[in-house]
Length: 59
Figure 1 (tube, rainbow, N blue to C red):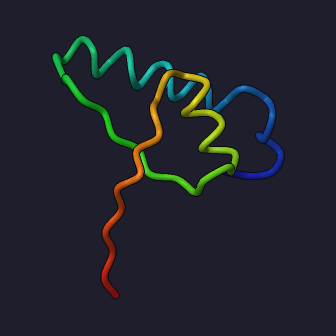
Figure 2 (figure 1 turned 180 degrees about the vertical axis):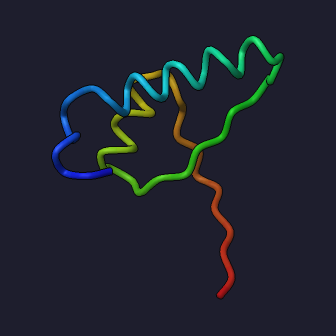
């Protein structure tokens, strides 16, 4: 996201609208990936997401 939109609430609005749409579509689980303690992490935590400690990667 461009720096000019940071801390303006745009991410919160997008996340909230997306979650509402997913609820109407009967999704039971929504998973998100972000860096721990970054802006995305704080946003997800504030919206009720729970941190899980399972991670797999290859590369």
